[in-house]
Amino acid sequence: MEQVDDVVIVGAGVIGLASALALLDAGRGVRVLDAGRAGCGSSHGNCGTITPSHAAPLAAPGAIGRALRWMLTPDAPFYVAPRVDPTLWAWLARFASRCNAADWHAGMVAKAAILLDARAALPAWIARHGLDCEFREGGVDYVFRSAQARDAFEHERDALAAVGIASESIDGAACVAADPALLAGLAGAVRFAGDASLRPDRYVAELARAVRAAGGVIEEDCRVEGIHEDSEGVRVRTTQGPRHGRELLLATGAWSGPLARATGLGRLPVQPGKGYSITYARPVIVPRRALVLVERGVCVTGWDDGFRLGSTMELAGFDTRLNRCRLGALERGAAEYLQHPVGPVKREEWYGWRPLSCDDLPIIGRAPRRRRTWLATGHGMLGVTMSTATADLVADLVVGRQTRIDPAPYAPARFA
Ligand SMILES: Cc1cc2nc3c(=O)[nH]c(=O)nc-3n(C[C@H](O)[C@H](O)[C@H](O)COP(=O)(O)OP(=O)(O)OC[C@H]3O[C@@H](n4cnc5c(N)ncnc54)[C@H](O)[C@@H]3O)c2cc1C
Image 1 (cartoon, protein in one colour):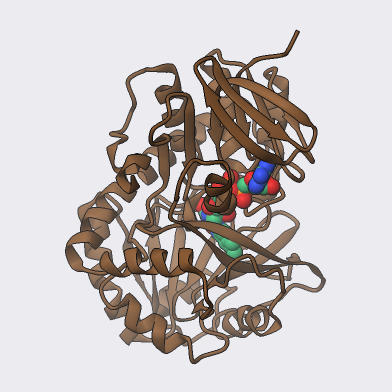
Image 2: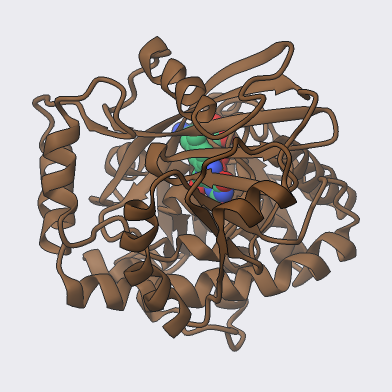
């Protein structure tokens, strides 16, 4: 007899795996299918910061002008590769239409709601599932070299405070005295004490372990090529043969747009936002907490045995090249702030594609015009941070329970 699973989940990244765990907690059986290895996508080499402080939407007043100027700078933190791609131009048009103060504020309210819920749930989630992932509380510091940049950030800081994301300002001398990893002469820092960090490859590996331990099945090297919903469930065509679920969750990160189109789920405004990271063996001095080096847009995270620089946002489709200029920009940027900007041994140079939705909000809920197909994608720069809240929201919606947060701002129907 054909095996029918309660929920087939496509994508074993941080979102698919966390959702699998929450569904198992809710008493549902799950089968997770991934085209590669579990955690091989954007969830592998990201910076691992847990940052409600990133609640400000990317679509901000002035963002388009800045993006156009940056297109002339080869190592700028944001870059759009001009090319003929109707999905990119449709995405950019929607993004541009949101670059105004009203949408920016509304987006921040909705982003803050899911970020704060996720952050509050994370310690208990890690403890309950015994996830060994170097989770560290104590905040993230946004470090500024120039007083001008620090002052310009005050507007965003006030807006964050208004949605419940508090911070404190630290002057340059005090932040250098408190953290010997920093270079003298910095203008100061803003500390978001509610932020945190973890080691992302450990986090996804531990999620996969916990899913299997709870009875979930994860199938690797199993690419989904077709999805067909009928009155009895959802039939899936894969490179390892057919699979059948009563429900299906699509959690394929940056690939969600092309896969949704190819499988008849319609247009999902999700673009791959390419970012880079370099991981080193631990240098002599590592910053006491994760840092955002603001003017250069570089994120720094240290773990027990390693140290990572990460950043940059390239809208260049699924371009698989490692751009040396952008990798170099990470090191050059870090050298402007840190005593030891690189570690003694380079362990990995990596790129990943963030799943960027055009309004910078995740897309979570029932797929338009479907009864049994659900979406959890579009988490952009914040999939690790939002993983717990997304997983619980998915499980509550699938099971039909009261949700902790209002699901409306994240509903896929907003693009239908
Ligand atoms: C440089 C960089 C730094 C970042 N830093 C942070 C950070 O500090 N904090 C934070 O919260 N977030 C950060 N992010 C963002 C974060 O990595 C993503 O939001 C998150 O990993 C998205 O998870 P996901 O599960 O949706 O996608 P992914 O991890 O990409 O997983 C999608 C999975 O779907 C699979 N798949 C695709 N197509 C198919 C198919 N047809 N059939 C079967 N499987 C398929 C893929 O193989 C993949 O494993 C960063 C991202 C980058 C690039």
